[in-house]
Amino acid sequence: MANYAIKTISDNYKMTAFGVSFEDFNDWAGNAARTAAKKAEITENGNLAELLALAEGQEYQINYVIDGKAWRGFGVMGEFDVEGAVVLDFLAGDYIVVPGTGADKDRLADEITGHVFGGALQAITDYKYVGPGNSVFVKAADNGEYYGEMWLRAVKVEG
Image (cartoon, rainbow, N blue to C red; front, top):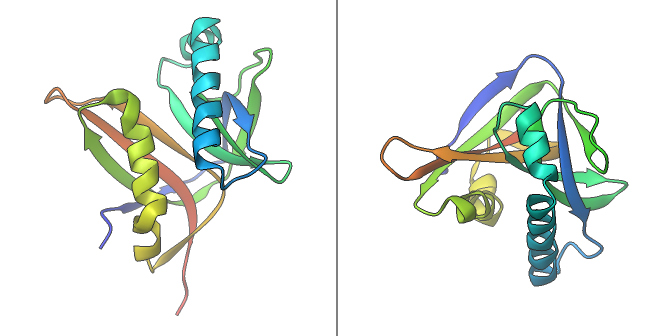
């Protein structure tokens, strides 16, 4: 059984992020390379730091669907007018929250995402993921490791 909680968000919210669209969702290696290149670009040019300064410093890895294409980016909670960034809508409702811990901050978001889509989501039978996106954050834990959570909008399965 998957380790998860259901949390309810009462208001729609926005996230602002820089990211990249995927032409072929199943090109795992290519998409990972494009995502890493985008993260390196926005880190080196200061765009990510600018967003983090506007939003109290918590970074999110965000998966979304834009114009019918899978998209992955890095951003913050809130709506900010920053050149080259997109503002994404997240809807109020129930969210499946899947936690994870690890020693490598840079890998933990991908590890949680892999865990969720590699089987944990299928093991959750009382809620169904409906999107249009999801997000993961990672922060330092008290024990020297890192703690993260993936949030996925879901609806209760009736019956």
